Length: 249
Image (cartoon, rainbow, N blue to C red; front, side, top):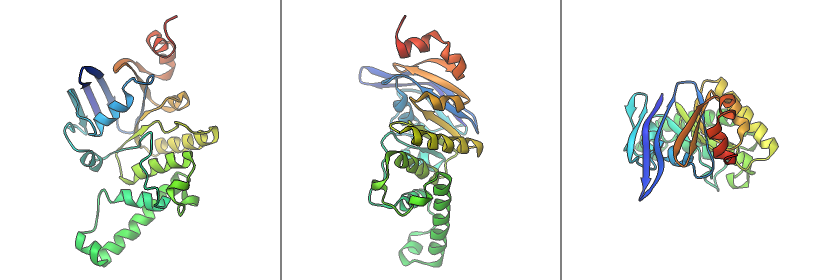
């Protein structure tokens, strides 16, 4: 589904990503780990069009997406979350998810402006689908609460809900467990397991190693370079990975 080949990104004289190659097959859950400054978020920004690579290819469903705008990449089926969720703070939880459905509008401008029957039918469908996503993520009890009033764990889940509302074929999760309490981590892990069970294809960045036990394989970045790939069991014994995290010796 996603194929990254020899990807590099320079910022002036600094090479943030160097020769990274990653493949994600349909239905897989693939993890990316690495110390702070390893280039993980830069990689996500390259995939989603927020940055343009200096060299290399990014292909989605067999076609290059290099040079496409972020909204166009989201429109063809790549959804993402962010470390800091860009929520509509004053909107309710339900309204936040409803808004994300309109990346792919089903009603014309005229139908929307005059509130024609086609627009009202579409609104009903969007509301039903948004409520289904909130139920899946355990947010249905707070659907009428303003997003700004939610605790951190619920805001992270709302970010995932908004990404799912764009109807992605590939979901990119940027540190979904970051800053969460133990209880919030447990509930988010259940959500990730359920998404995996439903066949969602996921590429995720995470520092909390608990999530790495449910992925198919892991790619390790260090100073922008891909230093190892494999299962968690294999990486735990890899000297290069141990040195990247804990230092030599």
